[in-house]
Length: 424
Image (cartoon, rainbow, N blue to C red; front, side, top):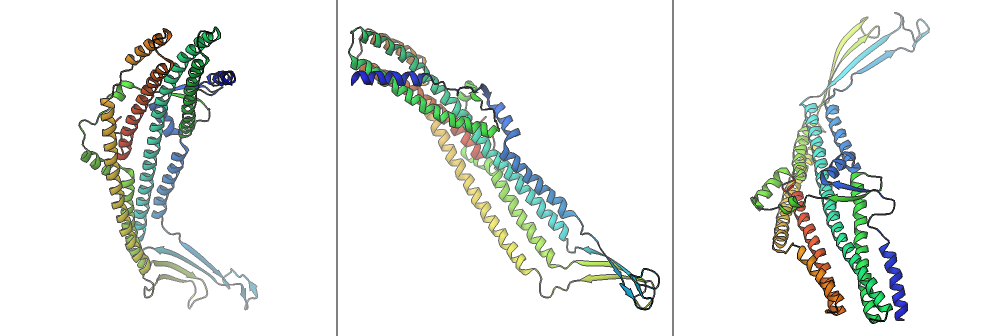
């Protein structure tokens, strides 16, 4: 049974080791954050769709400014019983022409234009808020990928070192110098490392797909994000307070601006509904060649509806209520923004404090592990002690990368909550 387990473990190790971080056939491309953001802004399909919504809303401003088309009516007698002519267009027949133009009163066209302008603003701020959300997703994915690939490098280094150790002790076992159980323990630990590495690679594959989707990339390239470590280490909350960031968010957040524009839109809509209560004036001109009390009759016409029954009461009341609804939604969004910033501030402060207090120097660990390898080779350590040191070494580096990623993500979350890049 032990020999079977040893053979099975060896086959699995060879199979896992053959897998590289980048998919087979995929081009490996180094990518900086500015490059990713540029491609995202230019190519993202969701942003493109919202841009069309903005353009459509702006076109409605032009539409609201347009005058109503004039109406031209032609009247021609079909049969003249005196002359026995059909459709008689001569002087013995009759032709009447009427031209009519509708004029909006009480500033209805201006009010409709103002409503359209506010609607275009709502769409513009909706676009900016979408950009804010997707940019946060892009930047978070970028840094998550960066630090996960750093952790994969830790596993690669440890797996390569451990494979040499396993090969050495396998040869010692073949010579009968060590027990089989020690080789099995070493191979089992190596198998554990490869499993953890593979789980990390699966997460990376998912985020690679997310990154390519955000940038509208169909090449299937495997991206290797590059970051300025000195710049990331220098991130700090110093010089900024929670209240300052809350005030900044209330001014800069596009979702708040969209709610404010919605309040103005409903206010303008109330003015439009009141203007619609005033009837339109229809002015026209009539020419009647032979069908009136005199030949070649010319007249001016004026028409207006008498607002007795319908004074647009229902729509005016609805518009008034919609103003109150939009004001309540604005207040709710401002409360959401305040809580977002407060929570993001606390998370960033706590994570940064943990990062600043952590021992981020890894060179000592590298020297220590070199000594551990030598001590184990000299049989000064048991296999249990040796594996415990390796486990601690790996956990320290991986957790350090997780802490770095959490810290950068916390600062990105704070930027997202404020609505502008406070921390670049």
